[in-house]
Length: 247
Image (cartoon, rainbow, N blue to C red; front, side, top):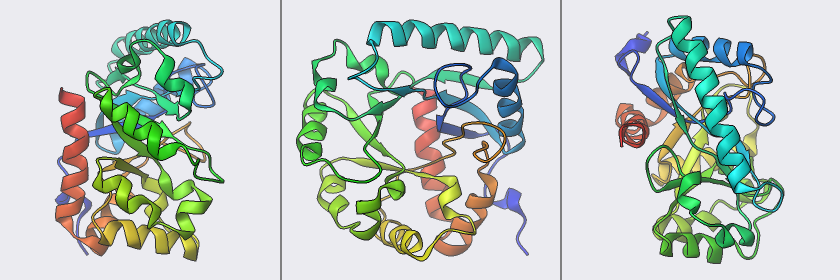
């Protein structure tokens, strides 16, 4: 049996999708949960987390969101430093894709870390008819869209070919680590095989929301991907995330 450490270097993983900030959304409810999530992440080899609280352009004010996010990062960082937990927290967002997003000022503030990569989310049950145009408009603004967990969208699961042209035109895909693990259904397995075999996945992330049902776990998926698709694709996805965290 292969040893897990063969596939990664401990404490070198960047998680680009994590709801670790306290009292921001449906993720960590308080700073104690945030700290426990950070400790769990470190045990998984994650030493950098891009905090991605949900941002809905039609509901939330961007200025209020940015200010609240900055306060949450400062609070959590102080707690982690006080407890000797060495993990870096960077700003980001999981942005709900709507036409009104294009009307906001300085939308680059919603991007991951100090980059032009923006983590975007679409509805779970459908693919909006305007999605293609909005993604293209973001690209014209210099933003590189990263589609969060496309495997959770009911239409994409059954018709992954919808993503072909979008990825060809620069859309990047982020898959949740848990989607590779045991217990997933046949349709999801088919979707995962399609996007992986066609080399369409750019990032692996936890999309962690707490310490229970959606924890910051990634090692099991790393083993499964390496065994099923090869070590190179694991290193490719992890290196993409590291580069975002280091910019």
